[in-house]
Length: 416
Image 1: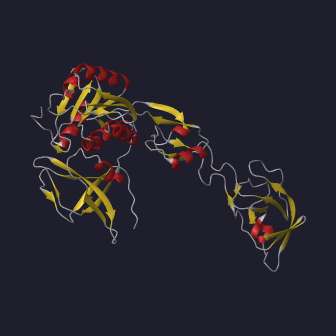
Image 2: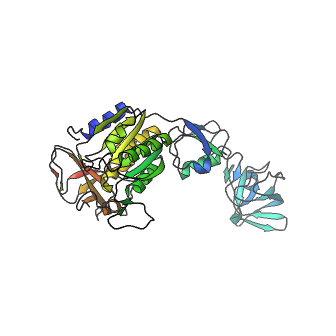
Image 3: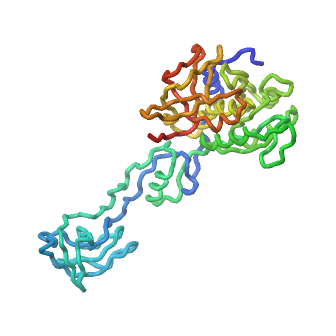
């Protein structure tokens, strides 16, 4: 075990060479279920938005020329000809020197070509006093002004959020075609693990990884299948892994990948199919024992048991694979430049990742401060860290005030 460690770059290349992330096809889903899903095709508007000319203010629909010359001390008098209600076709037509009452969003009645704001009018019985002039088409949102029929409004590969969902709703789309997401089975191993929510026996710790990794899968765009805690027993591991592979497109495990007598995961994975284990061990810190296998076309990522190590390796290797499968765009927003607030050391011969917390100073400079205190199993690191700094194998340390690239766990904003 670990006789030959791959570099991180080699590991990434091997993963792509041995496992060709392929999209899983498309599916049509309800628009209310489409948040964070990826469009499988361009969306072309089948109609204008709005589909009719509509008023942008409360007031009176008029012929603009009938208001010309109106002033505060010399009002123009128009005749009331009806009311236009929102949500229905106008039942009135505006003729010469006439005005129809209208509210914001209501359709423009026939004959009208402008809307006079109610603030510049005064109604006296069936007459409307107009104290200002309006221009042709003033206060009218024309049909297609927002979206034109035939316009490509969203591109294939767009991740749908609240704004995109709103656009699709405006087009009247109750469902949308999206890329299928990979089902990722998650299981943990270790005799010391107990499931959260149950009583904690002496010598036990709650299973962190299954929950943090399941959440990370959802954040990455996958569907997590919780497979529970498995005993460090060869036959039990085989059984659990077979079940996971049968129910999922990808498997992520944590624990059992080091060199102890109970670290049986690589052997159990290798026994399930071909080609089996591709590599065991990467020259990184933390995360050295990481193992990768492919079983009958399905990838198996076996991560270290330490929570911080497991989550770090997930972000380095598993998240990119999930995003490739779901046709997601590169995450340029998940990296930013900062200044180191303290010296950060590397592990000799290994690419080192240092967890950091970010803050902004009075000069609007982003500062990165290491939060690593102790070993990689310290769970408080997960809550305190905003991301991590990568130190190459040939760099001994990052000095104070050096510029560093911070890989974020998720997008972050700053208050200046």
